[in-house]
Length: 269
Image (cartoon, rainbow, N blue to C red; front, side):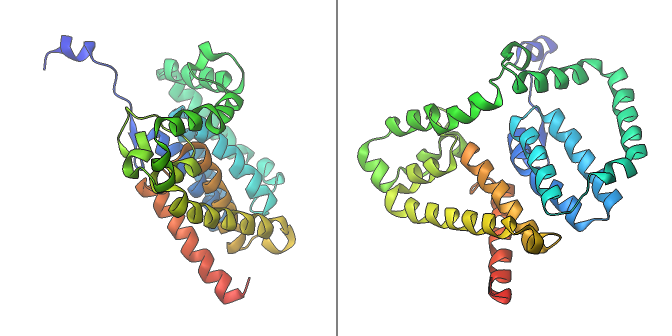
């Protein structure tokens, strides 16, 4: 292929070990929270920093949101304490210098990340070429699900449209995608099958919230970590879709479900 042909093509988007950058953005919260729970404080912090850098470089709103959620959960469950930030200040400094050093050789990429983060946190869409967090959340609860729902006939809504209901998540980019996991289940399986699945997911969500709401009992426990991870998975699923079908995200879901079920049964929670 000639160089002129290559230059005329659209630039290829990088992927990650878990799939597309979108998949990384949705999945990054699980290992980031696990780093604080399963590793010693310094090691866990370093792993978290590396994952956070990847989240920033992915230019995904979900990745940035997940990192913020992880910090909140890690503090609430006492996996970290804010005083640790001062303890690890030298490490933070080294990482910051390393990022600055890299940016000297690739300043355009570093600038792109900063511009994107500023854009999605404000309404300056010219910086990120994307809508901000609030607008994106509203769209995934209103306009996008509505557009997907009206695309299908009434009987498909009741009994399901199969893989076509998953739209882009299943490779059908020409079909409107709900970008909402609960609506996606209805479109794929219909009300009679998708409804019970949704109720099960909501049941686990409520139980997880109740578990971590009791901070005294959930702090520094595996069930606290699992419950926080499931809440994060559910939030991502509602605002993205595809979580039950993308290999890594689905693996995280079933790992959480089976392990939580085992602990519920053994400890009679």
